[in-house]
Image 1 (cartoon, rainbow, N blue to C red):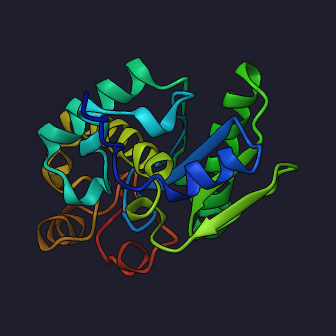
Image 2 (cartoon, helix red, strand yellow; image 1 turned 180 degrees about the vertical axis):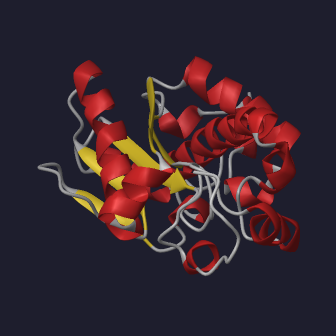
Length: 217
């Protein structure tokens, strides 16, 4: 019988398993560069036998390279079949208060804290940065393109945040967040200049703070 091919991006996970680590948590965040809405992080622990993952796991990759429909399909698969999945978010006022860098780390720490309620992590894999944690960890440059655990977390976080922005767009339709997800595209910037920022905008971000229109907050 032919051996089932392992999905790509598993070098870190397999190496860590061979080194004796078993509960490996992948963490990633989305929304750091947006002008509105929360920053969202996800934490994912893959199934135990990572070398034999197949099916939709083979499609898991950097969330930015996937269509929205494919991301949603994969997010459902990850949430159903991963050992543990957690999601955390920090809204715009918190980002303004503590800064985007600290918020980036804090939101991943919050996702990890949820995972720690369910299991004892052995090792953390993160995209580019490290966080305050007692667990050994690696911040991998382009981690969502090099680690299946991080890629899975990026997909879950992206789908969760997109859903939030679509829901917020119902009450704030002039910003078109259902399409731009709060990022600084021309359409969004024009709306900020026209009607001003709202409570969900990050007023510490220059494109928002320089807006001359009256704030709707």
